[in-house]
Image (cartoon, rainbow, N blue to C red; front, side, top):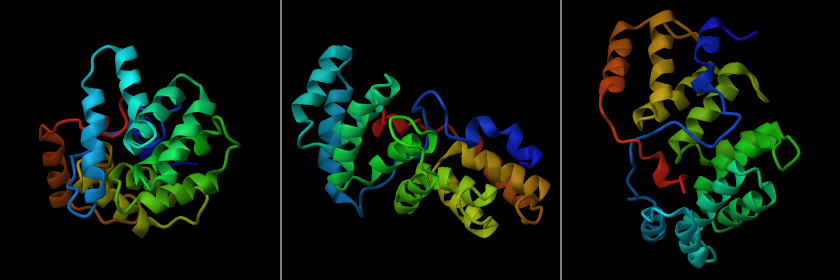
Length: 215
């Protein structure tokens, strides 16, 4: 049975079952991943197109060379429940070494949508990308904190939450507030940490999640 605090925040702590709307996070630097900068900028030119048909056409014009276009087309088709097309694009992006394809692929394996449900595959995909993608780290933390497909490891779960929260994932910040307020996951109550993450939650930060996944 999940702890009451987990139940109270399950809406933000679990993979959403019906869409790829994911927690927001602060935009990150590509200083260690310069290979992404140019292709992201190219894909963002398509993202600025308002008409959906024209936007799709824009992405398709670059789909063979731009892994962010592949990710966005993949998530688009997953939301349309066209899983064959979704998997085609997401797997293509992963084959092109775009680590951000892992999160939506992990979602599909976690839910068993378009593929056979495979918690181990979902776990491994998130683990592979969790030191780069803060949203993947946030999602992976629940595997450790709730003992999903692995032994409960509160230390690892909190480490992942702190990384995600430090990068602006508001849902992770909320969990840390509750964790340090109530002494959850073998963490001592710590009012300073409660106030720190509460203040982070109050900061107005741009929801830039769409820069990766939104069409």
